[in-house]
Length: 477
Image 1 (tube, rainbow, N blue to C red):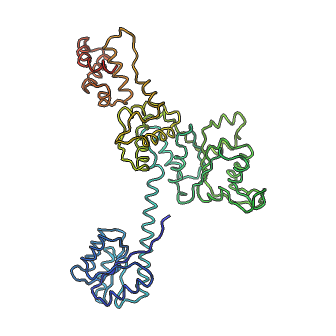
Image 2 (image 1 turned 120 degrees about the vertical axis):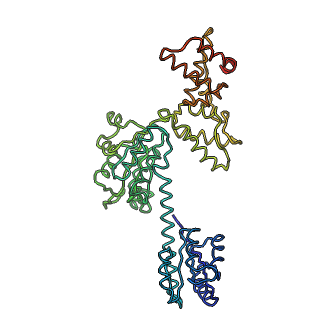
Image 3 (image 1 turned 90 degrees about the horizontal axis):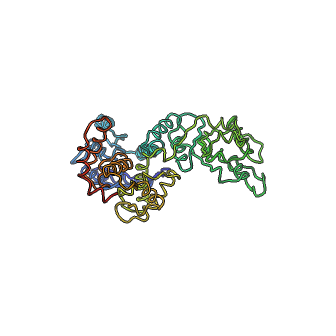
């Protein structure tokens, strides 16, 4: 929430008696006041101080009030300018309003008129800055905060944009650690309810009795220890969104009560008789296959259909390997900043290990691995040695090349290049550096491969290209 501060006001008036009187009035209501007698000094002050409002005479030495207005606006768009004008210059003051001045007051300046103009200017500036901060928060939230490069996640981002403006219940499914809560955050942040609360409940973390009271609240005396009335999460989320994480874990008894809220939009607190309306949008998430839970009679079919109005399935990280590098860089920046470190990137070997590993724990496992690596890295790059052992060991096993004794060197070269290109996702420069060969050798290999696929080229052509890199490749295989 934006905390409203007392504005700082700069008074620009060459008549010392008028300036002193204006400063005295403003200071009497505890505004912070700066003062000067000319426009050029006013600009110097604006360059050095955080000024919110300028109260300036229209006629000034060195630089008049209109010119000061124009230059002040180039320094700070949000600054508000109030013009002081004599009766003969009212038309000029009106023109100044068109140039961006907030208001003008005529001489002789009256206390009530001055304070009213300043108060309104301060209110306008406060609202303007608050709206800008909210826009910035929203721009950093929702779909724009999703980190992805894969087609699968691009499609999910588009779906989020489509479903967010609606009131439909959304069921977010996927393995643990795939980022279901991030999707829920994105839907809420892009919805008309974004300025209202997003309340989250971990259904798996609470026993039945506690979960029921957390969701629906309770009245005083509803059970032993209920010494006062407590509002539940549905009430706290009124007008906003309620996110039910791991909804597949709730018991049949709670399922019945949740179904009623979804059907009727009404509930009662534990121990209460008054029916309460629930103006809440429901987002739910689970790593279970709820349709199988329905078949096994562990989850109500009618509740499943109420929750599954729109289904968003988040693919595992092994299904969207294209996202690993981007996510790794995202977490690197996040945890480098948190730990006050200036780590810029990963070594090629470390990035190759990250993109090769299957990440059974999904994005959560990747995030934890990067956070750990940041803690143990002292240089500018994260090396392979600080990655978790299972990640580096997996990469080494995937990158090792086995062959039968007597396999022609040409075939070994072909396999080595193909495997390396596969793990660098086609990055020929990186593959060449890892193999210790020239990039042109990679291009010759691909060209030769294309020719062979089309039945052109000769044995001598292939042998010549292979011989050029024999020495370097032997040290790598």
